[in-house]
Image (tube, rainbow over all chains, first blue to last red; front, side, top):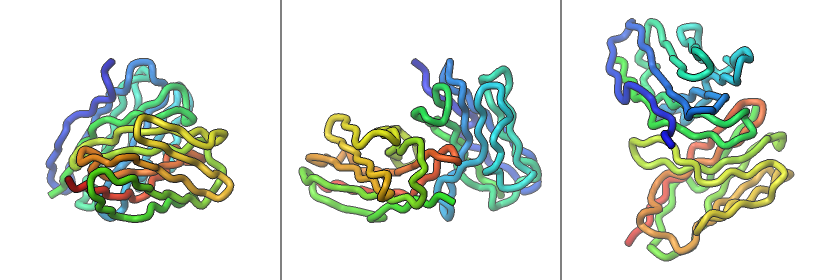
Length: 114
Length: 110
């Protein structure tokens, strides 16, 4: 079946602009995760959605970052007033049920802030 | 705060060799440990998942072990091939969904 998809694959934006990154999880997966991979920091957790529960936002680096998940499926990560340090690859993953289960990753969105 | 360390950071071996990648974590209260492979410019591919109650998992030429009490896992690759060249990432799931190590960059030379 189809895996996790993300769009766009690449995004170049000017400092100060807002960006939206999209994730389509595997159909039927109730848990969805966002991670960020940057050269200096490695891979870091951002936010986690599980069903209708309140999301775990503990990894979001600042209040410029937000995410929503509509209808328990598609998720959008929004970065407001982008900064150069936001440049990274943003990865989305989904899993069946909860964090005990194997996570499947999308190909990522490479964000470059100029 | 959970910290995951992978040793070595980079490894180069001739084709056909067996090799071991190491992963250690500081907090043994984990749900599971997952090994991933990442090719340059690509996303992550899950290789093996070991639940906290398990000791090892095998898939083809790959075998991963978990010693939760000592905070260690190893990924064993048998009869390495040039196509195994990639970065291998270890990640543990606990209070934070996944905490990653910085990876081991593997090169298998033909």
